[in-house]
Length: 221
Image (cartoon, rainbow, N blue to C red; front, side, top):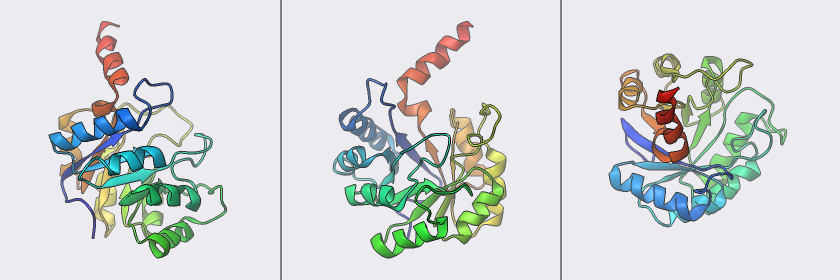
């Protein structure tokens, strides 16, 4: 059973190391504010942030553990990385669900199976395309998210979210599809749900004041 209901908003509370908000304290306050406003789950990065947030909110925490080179698999890339955030209190773990090779040599199916057997938590696979989504479900992922769409190819990252991918996966898979990546307005949030998303993860547009400020200043360009 999934730890959050359908047609819901999940808020990603993450801050880069260069941000004044980086660290468990600021991210916990951000998570509490999101929960107070109606978020039904929090996505958080790293065992320290996951532990702090899980101890401060009453909604489940989706744990990720970004390690390694961003040019390759870096969102919870290994079983050890997944174990760290699960032990820290994640109710669900999200990991790279693309078809790229994983740094510990395990296949996606082997990693998912080990998480299910060893820790008993659901797995969300962050994919970058339709075929990867199908393969992730075949590998045993409990949810498939469009998180990495637009981020693994050679070209520039698109400005708009991949609502089309959400619709295609929702029509093909027998598991929940989560929309994530560049959802910047309430209208896009609703569009993802109307396309078949079980839930939508929103991060930058809610929890990144630097990006929000730059977006407004961009109107002057």
